[in-house]
Amino acid sequence: MATPKTIGADDIHAALNQIAESIVARHRADSRLILLGIANGGILLAHRLAARLSVIAPKLKPATGIIDISFHRDDIGRNPIPKEFTPTVLPADVNGANVILIDDVLFSGRTVKAALDELFDHGRPGKVELAVLVNRGHHLMPVAADYTGLTLTTTAAEKVVVALDAQSPARDRITVRPALAK
Image 1 (tube, rainbow, N blue to C red):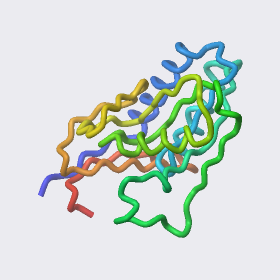
Image 2 (cartoon, helix red, strand yellow):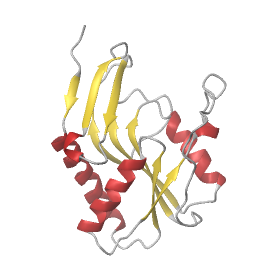
Image 3 (tube, rainbow, N blue to C red):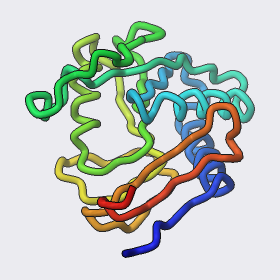
Image 4 (tube, rainbow, N blue to C red):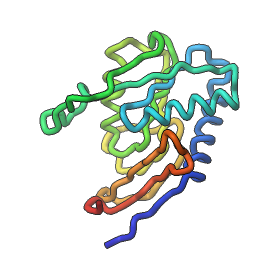
């Protein structure tokens, strides 16, 4: 059995800094910037990016919220919506705003498509961008991230698990392991 590969907190934090700096370079004076973490993997990332942006570009002040894709998943017949889910929380009107969708891993692109469907149910943004911590390839839809922290070479059978610790970021980890490993 293959040994899981682990990426530690230092590499993750460097990747988040890289994403934040790229956002600042593109949106330095954007007064209508909204960061939306895709539930569940992108929520903490959105908050971490907003915190980092407040340090490197204090005047930027993006609004931060949550976008839930539960009702737009294309596998809803096989995987019903759980009783406890995180609802969409939009911190501002999305009409005409510049929105950055944020997620932990970009794989097939289906999650991004569902997030776009949910977002456009609430209005028409001026522009939508995508920021991901990990792009692992194997896209099944024409989706590309505007901001990528880490690009990993994986097989389709491997699992990429992002574990961010809200209380202790020093314990953040990304693990790449065979799909059958527990």
